Image (cartoon, rainbow, N blue to C red):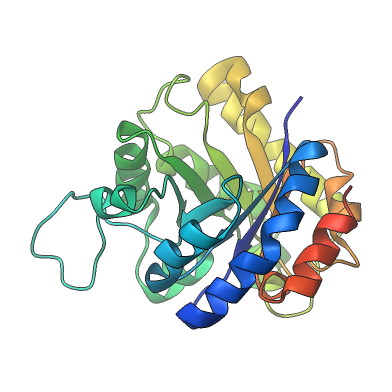
Length: 251
């Protein structure tokens, strides 16, 4: 049975001091989550990774929001996998829609990053999802299929056993417009079918998250879907009260 996963993406939010306060306040939540077969995690900014790692419960997943596929070099402003590992970070988001839109994060570049993470025993959380125009044109599945097939190209079933995929319809991120639970299930089930085609039965073990205006009020409906194994949450993960509310509503 796939473990549920609640992962907060803090984006460009929280000072280091605020991250420390959140990490300390989250400690009792982790024990509750683990007792109920749920993994909890957050993805802070680079500056707060070490602080959260040191002050949160050891069971808390702490993920980076991005990483470069090269181990070192003349890449101003970038961070390498070895730098993350030095801090004890072994999870990383890849291909979030905002990075795709603002930073030219192509499927091909995601593929390089995912391969590098897997080669270093890291867990990639690969984000995919479509724009409003793609959704309204009825092209969601073709678009997402391309993201999955290119982003995970040349990997094996053994490579992807710990992979996490996050489906985040762009038109539902930070807009207050929620994809219905039926849409989330349909696309997450479709993603699993592509993974099964590419990698065989290991697809049944890969966790697929839904992301897009997830809040305490609607998280249970999404996670009740058979192919939705958790949530990638933005704004509702920034305050400890709403983060706790997300957990409480899926226990």
